[in-house]
Image: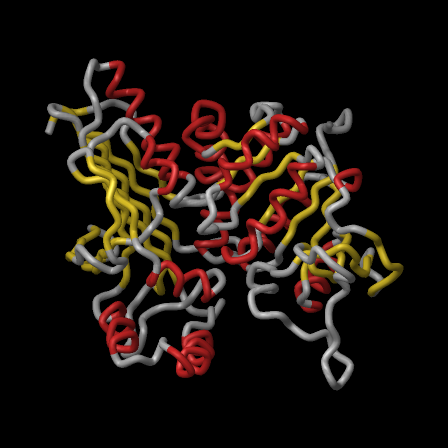
Length: 411
């Protein structure tokens, strides 16, 4: 698959904050990168970098997938595509940096790329998986979708395709750390009894408003706040309302935050551990504001569209405002405990969320390139021995602060 010099053709679907870093890093590594999006500004940035671009919709299954044009002749932005991408295309306009050029048929033509990177918003990301796996594609997948990609495992194996999904911070690095901790406990003849994951992507300082900026598609954030959280308690798989089990969490560097349940465990619910919980962290007061909106009916019926548009405006990511990413993972057995912590405040012109998420995604591309991902559909913890060293090497090399146990210690 790679050329003699280790480079290959990579097609990236979606040009949000993470997508830009992924495209930049892969291009600078010498790969032939093509970016697909419906946001001309994102494509202009990639074209100036030197990457190929396709203005089109990667998820359309019918007619054309050339980007729609609005009344004054500009390309109409589709919500979600440009913060991650949306749609799906059979056709798109290709550019090599000199503007939009000839029409290129079938954006999902697997003969055009060796590896595919799915960075579409959650509500759209599942739409490209089946057509790609049916064609035997090798896919690195960051799209956080309600759908479980593992139901396509048979399809992938039947066609020689591979898909490695949830390759971000949490899920992603959190899965790798949990798998590593469980292996260390097993080596000490102990079984994990409780896993707790807490993750934040927030401004470095709170404000008088939401104290929040959406580092990825705002629609995915709202879905996270509304979807039931699947957890395991004392061996029982159950679903509880998102935003429940609220409690304070204090990080020695960041300060006091508020934690609440969200639906991020996904494949980790299948590991042999009686209690598994994942919490999102925000500055105090943030989630009270959201609950007030919800309880007042602002997210119901005909009010919903206007409320969502206002939230998108108020949560707009400001690249000039300092922000941080924090991940805390704790795995406990009867006698032992393992802990891991990631902290980043950005660097190199990139936001912390773009760095931490995107660098794990790039490590997943490297694992795919190295032949570590066989045909089938895989969660990170299934290939943790191959992926974890690559991810930690990438993160640490970029200056991300990683502190995690190399040995298990007593309570």
